[in-house]
Length: 243
Image (cartoon, rainbow, N blue to C red; front, side, top):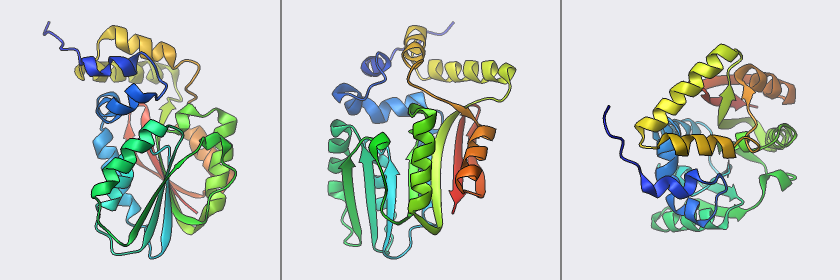
């Protein structure tokens, strides 16, 4: 058996799911090693966003973490005047996000970072696009539904809701298979079995997952009648909805 080299920089993250200062510092490298095709997912989201970033429009990134997605969108060199708003409850994450955007020189863009708990949001300003990458799994089912209702209400007609979620399989046999494949992925990314097991244990009371069918039913119930899947990897899914 080949020797596995442990990435020691990830230990602080694997020992806790809470996004403290240590987690924030290593977050970008960690998420690439923890989420399959994460860079591709971000690029897909950024590409899709171009269809909604109209002149004098506004976009939200909910759970923006270190602002990497907003940074990629800002570097599209779009000529439209756009307001990009990132919301996260971690001060440390937002500090990193603001540093990334210092290098962006585009007078058409207004980038705002707002420290807020997503579960406390009552409304959002009118906008044409809302993004959220792997935020919903950390909301309980009531919070999730309430936030999607707020998103739907805030969107202009024809506006887009693009989000990436972690899901449960609708079949228990596939759930076991998909989880094992995901564990294999983490091993290939130099996380050891103890880290993987510990992370899974710590997330037991923090992660709330739906199946793809349940997500689609919830979107339809709230008002999103036009929905489609733009990414799927075992128990990870990317969905786009249009109002």
